[in-house]
Amino acid sequence: MQKPVRAELVEAPYFRLVQAQNMQDPATALTLPDPLPLDSGATLSPVTIAYERYGQLSPERDNAVLIFHALTGDQYVASPHPATGKPGWWDRMVGPDKPIDTDRYYVICANVIGGCMGSTGPASIGPEGKPYGQNFPVVTIHDMVRAIGRLLDTLGIERLHAAVGGSMGGMQALAFASQFPTRAERVLVLASAARQSAQNIAFHEVGRQAIMADANWNGGDYYEAAHPDAGLAVARMAAHITYLSEAGLTEKFGRRLQQRPDGTDGAKSFGFEADFEVESYLRYQGSGFTRRFDANSYLYITRAMDYFDLAEEHGGRLADAFANTTARFCIVSFDTDWLYPTEEGRHIVRALNAAGAPVSFVELSSPYGHDGFLLETPGLDEVVRGFVS
Amino acid sequence: MSTLPDLRPDLAAIAGIIPDGSRVLDIGCGEGTLLAALAEHKGVDARGLEIDPERVATCVAHGLSVVQGDAEADLVHYPDDAFDYAILGQTIQMVDRPAEVIDELLRVGRAAFVSFPNFAHWRMRVALGLGGRMPVTPALPESWHATGNIRNLTVVDFKELVADRGARIERAWYFAKGREIGEFGANLRAEFALFLVERG
Image (cartoon, rainbow over all chains, first blue to last red; front, top):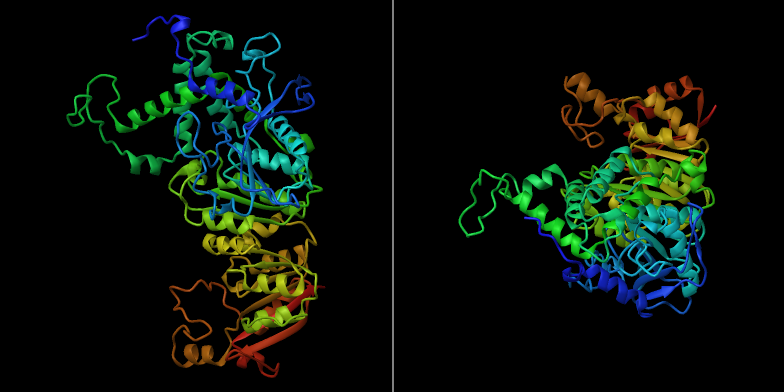
């Protein structure tokens, strides 16, 4: 089915339009005053951070809640995505009267560096006057958090009422607590870990190889031509499976067959069409993703997660990462999450106990696997509301 | 100090004796009744350990620092001397290894409160001795096949265990019909007992 595509006929995926618009709009983005030193030794400059905010900053500037987004998330935590029009990714959690109540708190969510929704990333124009592509420096979770720290400096927000994140957002929340031990009063970490496991690195590597095996990959220099969408879609499909659970997939799809394109009941095609509903669902997830996400960003952000090991930089003692913290912590895991299982949460809790930090921990029961933190999980809203209040 | 709310008698005794500003770990803290009272009325640094996730969620929703876990699997991960007091309320009779739990309580806490239903209370003796059946009483309301109390013990047994572990009993409280009673004949008269145990 593959057709040769002429560059000028390629319809740019809408993430690039959003990226370009956001980077230039002072209402949605801010350029940091100084270059950003990176863990790799490189320096990133200029650095633009695209961010959304909700609610009002109090005169005392003490009601800011910072939310960190996950791997393929963005700053649109509680407002419609500008391109897809879909509600914010945590719309059920953040808003007036919601567990993170924007009538009380000033909520900030920024796109990570390396991302593709307006913060400086591989699709941004680099010093050579064209998109960075693979010339973008490798960034780490700590680099993302350092950038956010500088965003807060620039906004004049010294202290946070709370720092909150799920999955990669939870890694950032932990890194934030470690980098800025007295800056957040509360740190809430959902479905996350203090280190990326071998299994998770392995899943990421499958995704990256799928992207780099795409005929359109071209060493990451594809912005003026067809994008490696097939590879990115496969990466997304593989990753999406890890966000769910076996029980969840069985309940949602079972072995049901997809209705045929002509409207007749599902039947085996004795070929390789999407016979099963689950196949059709994954293909849909994969193709939708390519329009809102940049393949290079996927490579860079997964790499940042793989490099994350908060204990490593403290001689292997995770407790030392939290040695001077003044924050209260709440760690939440989900019983069907096999990406960041409960044991990862307990590992953080033990370190926090050893560091003497006040910590709460609960494993919630959810059929949704890793995605449990994004969906309606019994007890989740109460825990988030109670802890953040 | 403001007035403490109505608590179960053993919890009220604990709350009455813990000094202001202590560091406390309540193991099996339930929905955090004691922790909340200690935090609110005594400025205690109150932490909890609770096995039931729904109860933990309730605690967290009330702003308490509570970790989902249990005495046997999770106490080992707390550092030495992390607390002034470790509290084990009506749980010792449910654990696999009570002796090791006593050791752990006195490692993470400088002192420990331990309460439990007294299996030598006269009702128990009557039910078993005369009735020939495992006792079902107000203090131990579940029948043998449903109860979580797998290590039933008596006041005398507990004192002996504490001595065996090289610890000592600093103070004891005995309860019957929801009220504190005197020490005389406690092993026969007490439905529940509470001990403040210190390192030997």
